[in-house]
Length: 300
Image (tube, rainbow, N blue to C red; front, side, top):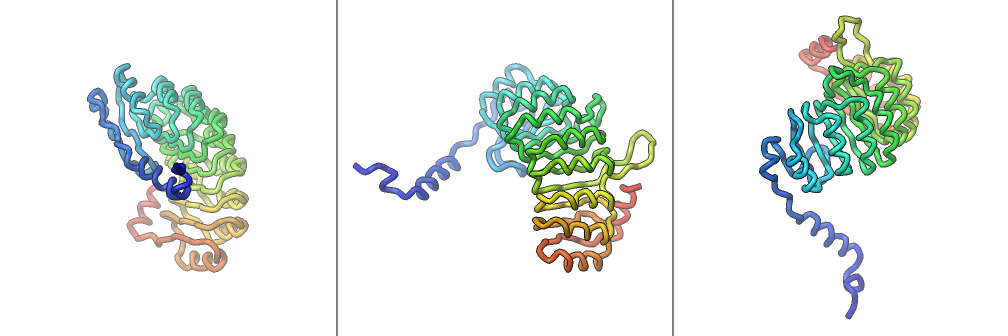
């Protein structure tokens, strides 16, 4: 009798395997997890079955055992109950993708993130806004994860020390940031991300301590970005930029796409830029009067 491989081409076998995986039943939510608003299924950020929940109080041992029993390795979670101890439990799942939104992560707790040796995608946002002393310096420990390719970090009062820590993550291929307290001076750390192909960079938040506003995305930022020769995709958000500054991007030989998101610049200047970057797809929409006013208020 001929083997299955001899009767079916390899491509057909692969398709059959994929169909079997696609048909795999989605786990049901254990009753003990229902108070956490658990959802199991598709998620906008991941390809694959994702476990999503929020915990404003620490999980019980019974709840943790239920989470671990699901065996799902794409996780989106947050809330005050997701503290350093919770990260230690999540590390046992060895997730491939992890979103932490509004967690109680501390710099010391980043050591548990570093234990997630299969982690490919990490998003850390709104991390208690510095109220627990989170400065972001612990993110440097993520250099111990060779599989980590994509990092999103924002919605935090963390400032330049966090950016310097992120600069140690040379394995990154994609980095997205915005609404931090980074300054233009910290942008030099980006130059250490020599494998980065995709960068999404948004402006800093207004200071809450009464000190003068310090922007992270200005014309000066483009002088740094123009040196990132590996970049293929670039998104810039919430700033006023000039044509001479954007023209510096001509040095990026691999650049394919440029998205100007809520950027105050004359449409005529963008058309000139298109002429100077003919191989780059530029996505730009002129601001309406209302959008420009909102940007003015944000940048004050």
